[in-house]
Image (cartoon, rainbow, N blue to C red; front, side, top):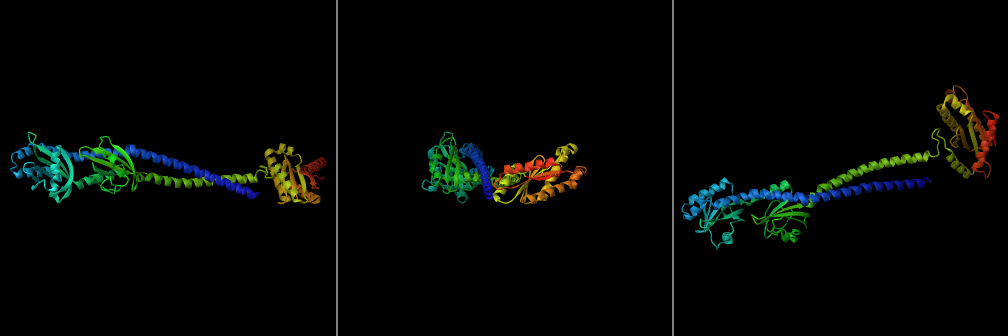
Amino acid sequence: MAGKKLVSRVYLFIFISVLVFSGYFITNIVSYQAAKDSLRSSIINTSLPLTRDNIYSEIQRDLMRPVFISSLMANDTFVKDWAIGGEKNVAQIKKYLTHIKHKYDFFASFFVSAQTGNYYYYDGILKKISKDVPRDKWYYDFTAKHEPYELTVDTNQAERNTMTIFINHRVHDYDHKLLGVTGVGLELERIKNLLSEYQVRYDRDIFLVDMDGNIQVSARNTVISESNIKKAPGIGEIASQILQVSYISGNFEYDGENGHMLLTSRYIPEFNWFLLVVQNQNSALKTIWQNFIKNTMIGFILTLLILGVIIAVINYYHSKLETEPGSDALIGCFNRQEFIRLFNMQIAASKDFSLILFDIDDFRGINDRYGHICGDMILERIASIIKETVGTDSTVARWNGDKFMVIIGAASEGANHIAMKVLEAVNTDAKILRLTENEIVKLCAGISPHANYETEASMTFRAETALAEAKSCGHNTIRTA
């Protein structure tokens, strides 16, 4: 029986544990997924486009300045008049280009004459351009386009072939005939540093890509392994969509070498380039994942504590149910229902035993004279005396009111002897005498020894009959049925 109870309790604990842990874990998973979806939606629809537009505005602010200056140079009457006048005083154009370079802090400033082919820069004449020289091809390609200006990335011969972003602008005379090309140059490293600042500020990878997919400018490149996005794993599959000229920006996703990537693009018409801002989704969600792990661990510990409290409470009330369902709350004896169960166990044991039914004489009068609180204390004390006298091998139960039934492992004579000892102990108990102001509390007892094939009902009936006979004979009387 005890083994079955233990197994049932173990199953109960397992069920509660699974229920509590599952409930918390499922709740945590749902919360994590909701936070993940919310953050991802925020990155795609708000954060990434906002970063892109901020960078676009700052690039326009930082790079449109040299475009504006080159336009001013192309429309400067000094440059036009000097070229129309036959380019006689080289010192004048040298001084002009030097002034432009230092005043606006450019890496280069130049003027290429359509008439003489001379390449003037801030230190004089650099060279004479020629169609036969490959590195001069930019000039002939640009003048053939009839575009007012263009932006190119090339080496700067005047500065040890350093990679430079040149802003080339056409110069026309007053009759709109080509006089040459003028402009300024920005060191490519400066643009990289500019993008690096953006990258640190926004914690995203940033690229400037031309129409063919070539990465013209980038800072720390951790997401695209190739110099051309068309050849890079993942992004190469959507490169054609990214490189479509549109004044409406686009948002894209792809699986790259380092995880799932979120990309937003914007076409920069002034440079004919694309601005790409890339965010590694895994990195962006890393904080949420760490918080999920942290919350799971904290929740696991708290759940263990809660489970411990639940188990302790269950154990407490389970033990209370095991010890108290057959007990009388007032005096700590078994109640009538438990007596019947124990009686049947005694019958099954096939041992000689007797029932002794005790009744307190004139207990109603005691309650009237000394009060019910005192009466309860006397009941509790008498129960203690009976239990102490009959020993731990016997069963003491409160039968009803002021009656006590005892199952004692003794025949008629032994039971009678025990009953007499109980009566004497109650009569002389100092605590009871103190409660009753030295009035002796007396008992009567009825004894019914067990007979073969006798039931609980017949045996208790004989004990009650014997008790009635004892009470009719006076106080402190014992009778055997």
